[in-house]
Image 1 (cartoon, rainbow, N blue to C red):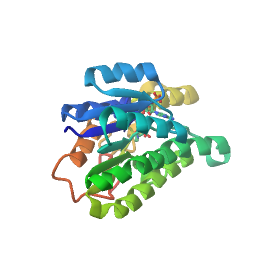
Image 2: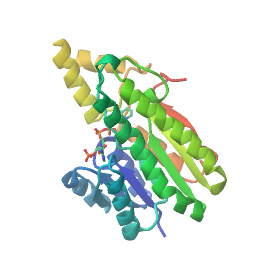
Image 3: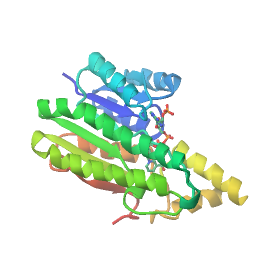
Length: 249
Ligand code: NDP
């Protein structure tokens, strides 16, 4: 039977690119996100099952997981992609913002992993791919809460990889630099508003970190996820794979 892949935040951006490439492999797909309308629209051409759930809500994850298993069987491939970004200097970061970022970006991935791992281990095959970031591997000003959540995601990735190494399950993180999605459009708008300078200046202030001087394309992230899921990458586990044009090495 075709494998079942579940992508959180699969309705747009990087998640949608990943979902599209997994659909191309003939997998049964479940897309999870909060915006039901957007999910349904994204799911239709991919023949995917859309399930509206907030990954910061443990009960919603439990329900969504149970729903997904009833509709498409145990999850073989989990892509923890749902994520949010908010920026502030540490002394201006509220406790609420800190907790919100950790809950969505880190605790959500923990709860989804916890839900799917027992069946993967039992079936002796599974792939978990966490979408980290260059902020999983280095710090930048203004993003302490986001970077803490993405560093934490790497800790989860590495430890879980050790726990399931003998069970045919691999756990990896794909860590892109600034990627051309809504997150970057919002960042560009915020920089323009703050500095009063043009969009070119704003975009350059983001691409300056990438030695290739460009944004990553969502399809590049999807291609790396595909490699981790396809036969041939069985020995790759516990890794943080940097997609950053050489920024991280
Ligand atoms: P987008 O803002 O385009 O998409 C984010 C996705 O996450 C949406 O599908 C959104 O769906 C979903 N999401 C957000 N919060 C929740 C929640 N509480 N529950 C369920 N789903 C949620 O971002 P990207 O595609 O750019 O980002 C995807 C991932 O890649 C994130 O983890 C991000 O941190 C990471 N990343 C992005 C980079 C970039 O520059 N774009 C660089 C490095 C990493 P909905 O709104 O329907 O809930």
